[in-house]
Image (cartoon, rainbow, N blue to C red):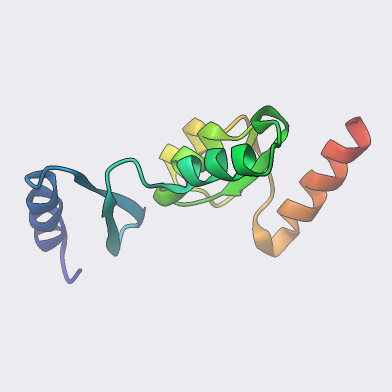
Length: 113
C-alpha cells in the first residue's frame, strides 16, 4: 500500500465481507483468505492426515500470517525479527534466519530430547 490510509480502508472493506478475513504478514500488504484458512489450521490438518501428534510439532514464524501457526504448534517459535503478534503467540524466541535461528533451535530441542 502507498499509505496507511489506503491499507486501513482495504482492511475495513475485507472486514465487511462475511466469510473472509485478512492477515497482516508485513506492514506493506495484507493477505485475504477464507475465514479459518491459515497456517495453523493447515498444520493441524497435516498432523491429523499423517497421524502425527500435533503437540510434537515445531513451527517457526516471523510475520502476522504466522501467528496461528506458532500458536497451534506444540512448540511455536518466533524468529528474532518477528512482529509483535507472532512473538506474543510463540512459546520460544530464537535468533533471526541470518543468525541460523531455525537450525540452532532445532539442534537445541533435539538435544533436550
